Image (cartoon, rainbow, N blue to C red):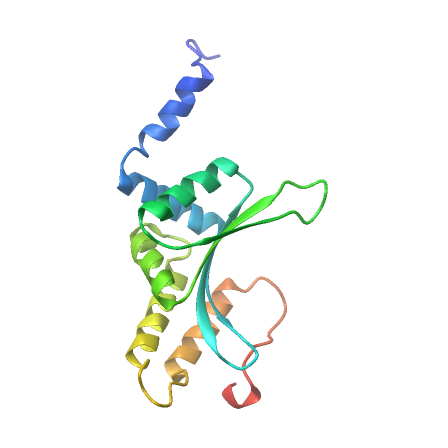
Length: 171
């Protein structure tokens, strides 16, 4: 049995003391990304690829914390809610789209990632390839980008589907 149980308010204060500095907040956010995040490359039916970053959770406290942090870091984001079942809690999603924005957030969280570090590194490489080929007349994705897309997809793979979104000429 605890000899001196603490009041709930002091426990909350202790939990947030380590987050009083920017580096602590970024490390906490990176842990959230590792556990509840998605770092990926998406592809539309025409074979056009883009980067995508998302964090989902049911905690409104977490939503507020992450949205304040991203605002302070000047990284634009989108917030949406989803409730799939009346019995379940609402799930909030913070999403970041686009090469430049995703690169910005990945540069910030990368040093602290553990579980999703490989997806982040590959996505950063994909973005670098995209920017180096951006002004070329035939700005089709490079063979390396297609390899990266496939590897990130495999790392994020959860189910039996092997379907890729590329037209058959790119497979």
